[in-house]
Image (cartoon, each protein chain N blue to C red):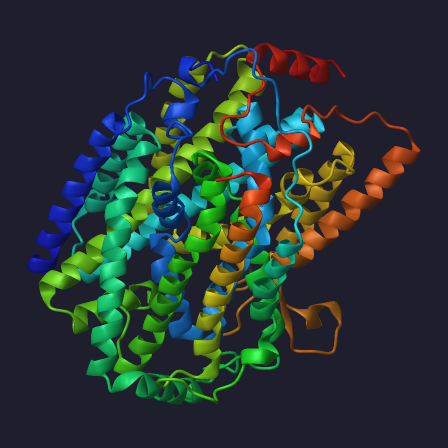
Length: 546
Length: 84
């Protein structure tokens, strides 16, 4: 494919500009010292409403989302629209939950969800499980951001490969991630926070232009839906269509609901949340973040536009459908802007995710098991180095393994992160569960989830395992063609086992961990006294001696 | 926590006891959680709006319901809780 020079030049200019911002970000809202995890990893815990909106918006609605959701709608129709109910349900559902998480973290200086579990249930083992789950779920997500960049590079005809032995390395992706790694190392969470302004502005401009321009070129909205309908009727697959059918409604609802439950269990979401300065900022953002849901809904419709316009993906890679649509509809220079929006859109979440994974390692593995007396300065420097390792790992994942592997892993990631719901989510409300019960529930949910995903095949593509998250209930002997989201089934079993084992352990009077939090911690706000360092130390020591 | 500007004066004790997030307004939040999870409400082509089938325009409209509910709850509980 020919290299599109105009597009590439616009793309490169914007990319370089944003990278410069990333490096300068370390001076923005300049801290006294950068050598503290609160500064490097949480941007000073002091972001107001606007910054938080851009940061969390840029964090949750990733480049991969913007590429994959329309690709899903392009392939399956209505089912791919689940992203809309998913991102509507999440904010009102978590409105009251997230402020509790913020408050208790504010009081105790927690940086990760596992920090909270450690203190709440007095169990380093449970915290370790939560931390590892978080890291494993996040890693492929970072790798997938590269898939987002890759799809636009492909559309621009950029295939500057470097052949090294038997391995083909895509040079531009390596350069992009090296720059990203460098400024995240230097500026920490401030870099993605500042870049998110540029990224989101570009995305809003591009999508509104697309919504205004593209329908008029292919006969208006009514025609788009009608033409898409014709295409769906022409396919052999019974699962696609403009509307849901009797068999995939349960899947649609459970996937939307399960994904909503999982969203704020991801460590990078928590990182964005804890960086805000008070409860009011979070509450206001629960009303403001749905603006991104509207954007996502409109982006999802790009999949139908591509169907109506007869856009063809490059090869079999459906993820190139949106770049290809832009390429055929926009003037070259604006296509360059649109591609830059997607490319930069990959950098913001990738940076936050690597920071979140690094913080988990530092706080819940390094400090817990390797160096118990690590100073804040040591914590910050370990985190910085781990963030580099994490990004390096993500690049290797994409370069050396089949990209499909990362997509599978991300699918699994959604199911496994949900298994931390009882300890992280319900733990914010109740201390009823026994730490042993939660560990048992985690094992059960994890095992069942993996087993169900393993059983899911796709007869059309010939893939036998991990071909999706829609579990056919007929595999359990039920006389139905209905499918259900694996994650939700697994977490229900997880909860059941956790409750059962808790009861058994209580009857057996097995010692439980000590709760280091107090009820009023969950209502603390900006300006409320934080627990003094000494106080917290004593509590932690008590806990570990239990 | 070691940054000097954020260490509060030792005399300021915890003042959050007795606080609560409880409010009757919170029940409003159930509406935007329930509506999008009931496909029989919106899983239909007709009536169309600006060419959009019901399935698409109604679900996009639910975003507005979500914004309204969270905004009302925020505004109505703000004074009681003393939060900004």
